[in-house]
Structure formats: structure tokens, C-alpha cells
Image 1 (tube, rainbow, N blue to C red):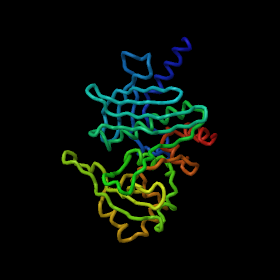
Image 2 (image 1 turned 30 degrees about the horizontal axis):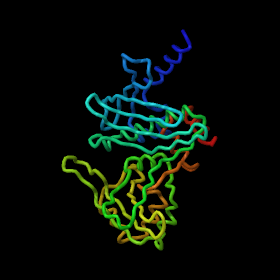
Image 3 (image 1 turned 60 degrees about the vertical axis):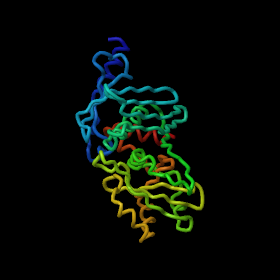
Image 4 (image 1 turned 60 degrees about the horizontal axis):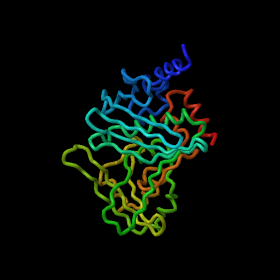
Length: 293
């Protein structure tokens, strides 16, 4: 067997295994649906022409074409059916210093809130964790609003939930920014609904006007148990009657900011690894790469 055939066989074997772990209690399978990567039967020569079968969740037994490209400065991933594009995701990378910057995620409306964004995050980050020697990770979502803006709505819902589950920390100093002396006004924005969909399209959120930069924060509440956004409008009104609940939400990371960057810090390494590793062996490799930065 030639060296080229050996690597092709090894890669094929690894790519057709399920995304499951050997010790379920230790790893966070709820982060993303289980999946299986397949090579196209007629084109096993290119690892960029694959398909993915979703094995759990709302899209169970659904199969998508998957195209990926990895260069020295970027990784791109596209999902589609035979009829239409479904989702895309782009990560900037710098192998020399280990930087990975996740900044672009798009899912077609009818596929949203069904786990595809989480799948793409898990698949792409695992590929880069295995490829790079060291890792410094962040999600770039910064967007600046003016307090006078009247068309503001919740920003980056899906990627915010991913950041929270991965153990990332908001780049803004929230205890300082959300000090009552720095808050000018708190407005509750109602949920966004669509008559054609039974689910809430966007949950309620807060528009918090500040005296200091970034002047406006857009945030929502996440359930610390389910790691899902709270959609009950009444829950958001608590802050009107009990301003002190904001301090508790900051302390427990229950409030998630949708217009700020998120960074992976040492206190988030454990959650990050548990979301992405398949087993204890991989977890140890990933931890070493994170700690080498």
C-alpha cells in the first residue's frame, strides 16, 4: 500500500465515524446534534466534497451536502441540499500564533433553531483543533449602536448561545458597564414571531443604554440548566420591578450580550473541551493545545 493510499484509508475511516463519546457523563453531547460524515461514493479523492448525516435532534436522519475549504488564513464550510443552500460558516485563522476567530454564521430561516449552527461550530473547531499546534479562540460579534437607534433587535442569537455553551466570556466588563450608576435606561424588546412558524423567531431582549462605551448593549436571558434562551416575556419584565436581579444574572452568566465579542479564557477551557472532545484521549490533546498559548 502506498503512503498516499494509507492516508486516504485512515482519513476515510475517521470521517465515517459517529460524533459520540466513550464516557457520556464527561462530555456535553447536548452542545450539538450527533452526526456522521460520509464521502461521496463517486468522489473519494477530495476531502472537500462530503455529506453529513444528522443523527439526532429535529433534523434527525436528514442528509446535507458539505463543502469545506481550509487555507492558511481561513476555514469555510457550506451546507446545501440538491435544491438550495442551507447554511454557511467562516473562521479566520493564523496557525503561527494559534488565533481562531469565528465571525460568520448563516442558516436559512426554515433550518434555524434546529442545531445546524452548533453542528458547524463543533465540526469546524474540531478540525482546527486537530490541525493546529496551539489555539487561541474568540468569536467576533462586535456591533456599535446609538441610544437613538429605534430599529434595534436581538443580535447573533445562535452564535451567542454557542459562545455561552463553549464557556466563552464576553469581552466587555459587564459588572462595570451594568453598574446602576452607568445605566441610563433599560428597554424590553418584545419577542419576534412569524405566523408561519410555531416557534418564537427571536426571544425578548434588552436594549440597555449606557453612559460609557459601547453606549448600547443588546442582551437576552439564558436558562442556566437547559442553556437555551428564555422566551417568556414576563421573565424579562422582572428587571423593571427588581433591578437587583441584574447583578445575579451577571454573576451566574445568565445574561448574554449579543453585540460584543466573546473570548475563550482559562476558566472556560473545561467547558470548551467537553463540548468538542469525543473521549478522554482527545480531551487531553485539546487541553494541551489550549494551554500552550
